[in-house]
Length: 469
Image 1: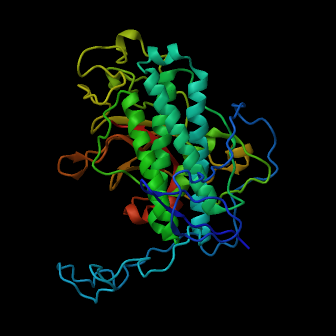
Image 2 (image 1 turned 30 degrees about the vertical axis):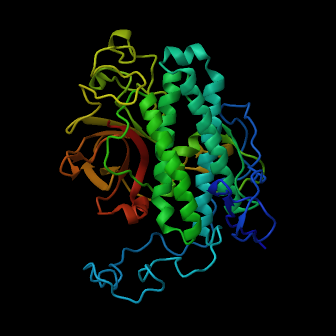
Image 3 (image 1 turned 45 degrees about the horizontal axis):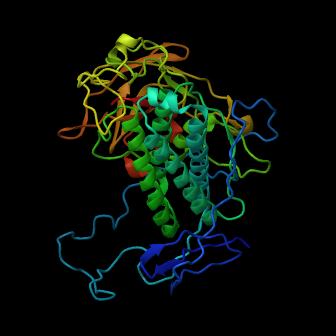
């Protein structure tokens, strides 16, 4: 019998607080009670400092994503639910109130006691990939603090207080990992070993900014599809913290902190494709994932935010294939914005910066290189990249509420280019801004934020992160 967990609500004498779900054997019910001022703290998951970092060099004993009977090659496109537009939406009440000041409707509002667990394969696998993300962030933040000296951080414009903030963000990840582990139960994925590309503080910060981007967006993409509304509620409260982390790393990176009006969600397979290359190995009998790993995609002329003028970025000014993390060592001092004191050209860590020269612009020619399918990747090299798309014809630009396509011009067996579209989410809000996602597809079918995962059968390579602003 699988374990089930619920959240205890602790009403402290000095105020109220929500306690994290604590590991229990069997069913644990939510309850409210007066607590002593020195009530014991709920325990966290066991965490160890990963001392081994680097690529996996062994031979996998298992390969491929977790799978069972597959009913169809893809989810069919269906018309809207017949009742989707029947509610009059006129500001009046159209049903009896189940209680005073309580409108009719809603999910999980009938008084049933909440149980915070996975209620379907979809829930379990979605929570599992989110837990893989929490584990790597916990290790990543610690690794950067251990790898670089105080002098290294100060040379990059980051003080002891900034380093303390990064340490606190690592502590937050302990809580997030505990939360999801408790909802999944005994077979929840464990902490792994990892392989990071950075060699300087600036590269570490940029890598954190990009990794937290796809971690945050990966949860937005599935959260509202979960059968467990209870688990989705707690996940919302953890991913909101991650959104703050992502913004802080943008500030540490000298970028404008929030250049978009809406944050973007991506499918689980997109998040797993971006995350898996940095996981070297996991414990024996680690819970495996169902999600697809697409062939890698690389933006050859990725805008380099360490430059005063990112339009002068040379080919391959990145330190890795998947995230497109900036290479800080190839930027000449005269072209570096890090120690420039002029407003509009300075990209030292700060609350906010406005760039005189934007990182990208509509009409910019963007060059790509992509891998073939069939590459071993992820924990213990035990997953294999794959695609069902017949050919790459379009570039999908995914950001905010938008999915926009541009034509892909193929220039060689695994190379091509396109031009950055000029499109707005609303007037005054360029859709292509911030740290966003691009992928190569065989179709230009219309998908929206709620059904974006239906694009997966048409993805030829990617996604890759694109530092558009």
